[in-house]
Length: 87
Image (cartoon, rainbow, N blue to C red; front, side, top):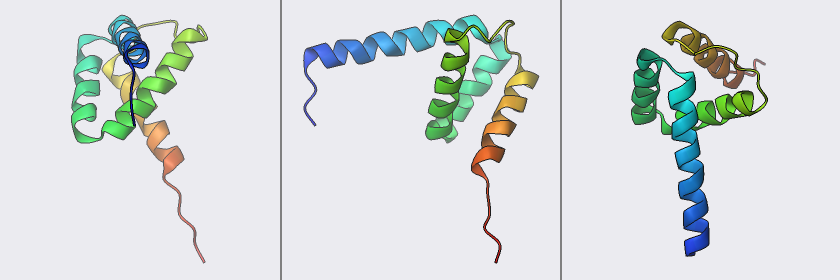
């Protein structure tokens, strides 16, 4: 995969936007939890970031997300992915 300078700049721009938005919507504790999640399960952190960015852009995040609310959001995301087929 060959990335040119325009694509690299676009990726950097998106990453900077994510950082700015995450600092706006998270408390210190929830931001720390998000960073720990990123270390352990990077794919879950990415999914959560995209979900929260969509909510933020749609204007559906009205208040700062504290640690307890982040736990509830994480729980709902993990439950959606956790399914079993019983025979």
